[in-house]
Length: 328
Image (cartoon, rainbow, N blue to C red; front, side, top):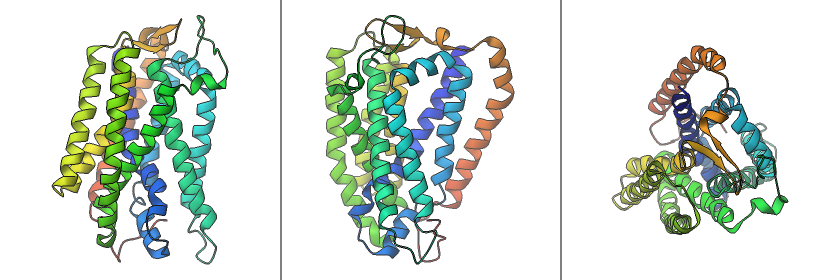
């Protein structure tokens, strides 16, 4: 039963990265497009129908983490509280700037544009540092309490993940724009996607080679997640070369979900490690009675989330044009 709930948490978390990753990618890439306001609104408008729906996956994942695995939540948030704070600041800044930028047509928008770019960048860096620390091990003592200073979260391996996530989300955002942006912006989006393919591949290779020598207790599932990441990158690259941008987008979405999948399977059933501490999935789980309560709400909620996401994509699968409603 605990393993099933761990898989549900993994589904929600991977879904969040697969979908929201291109939100942050588009935000970071906004300065790469012309300063013409109409084109920038069309660029952001490509995200319009999906933006809030994508963020719901994170809300659902965090809610399930609190309810189903409270002991894991306490250790992780305490051990990486600085990254949690920067992540929240980035998310709030990005989300607020997106929704407020075009609220007043006659108002200057430079500050809101900077908020979108800066919030997306901070969010991407924070997620990379956060997951990189979960892979290499949080700075916890033998009792699971935080140890060391703030700099303990910024190891070279974690910084590699932070920079890698910036490149990964930019690649994902560029491929998304190749599918959804107006035809006049497709060429720029494809060139950006090809430009970020090299850094993403370098991140995959360096992180894998580094982890091979630095990490212990890696399971076959963890190895499978790494193999899936390389396969997804190959699909993304093939789609760009063959001009099959929808295929490339599917590959980029799977690739963005692979880091979260790796964190959840790397040492399973151990789900949290440090130099002198380990927490298994059974130890992290809540009481069986709570799972019984969650069983009444979680399955229908996940089903509704999946259906709404599918209907949204089906209704807005075509590129933005002059007749499209621009939400932002």
